[in-house]
Image (cartoon, rainbow, N blue to C red; front, side, top):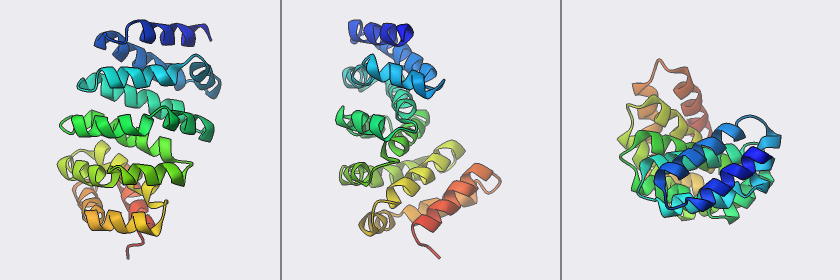
Length: 210
């Protein structure tokens, strides 16, 4: 618990320093990967609002955006309660803002997909709010931009799978936005990549394609 508290305190004290908050978000990600008890310690120490404050203060900084999304994706992991707390803290808005601001950075986009997927795993409410705020169109645009990047392609397909679970209306919106064509393109370009194949085929199934 001591490490979690120190990380949160450093982020709060140095929120205007991009290098400090990048390192702080990285430390949260690393600690959160260790175990569920560590994720709980971080949440109790105030990691969630500190990450959001960092992403708000440094929205134009790609390294902060990436590490902030990495922190969110790991804090969310395997906990509906933590997902909803992060949602209430504004995580979805910061993830989407990071994608919009840094569409030219593949690693930011990849971890926006990861964070989006983990945040919405347990909640149709969160999925629907993401869609209402433009997640579908951002995902499709990113998959088109980075069709040659296997990691972005795989995580884009996984983000589609997650959102498609929400409703028929969301699946229809994904289809109108061109998701099927971009899934097919990812499968073609990365025919030798098993991760893309698994995610792409699952996305096709979730969209109800034949």
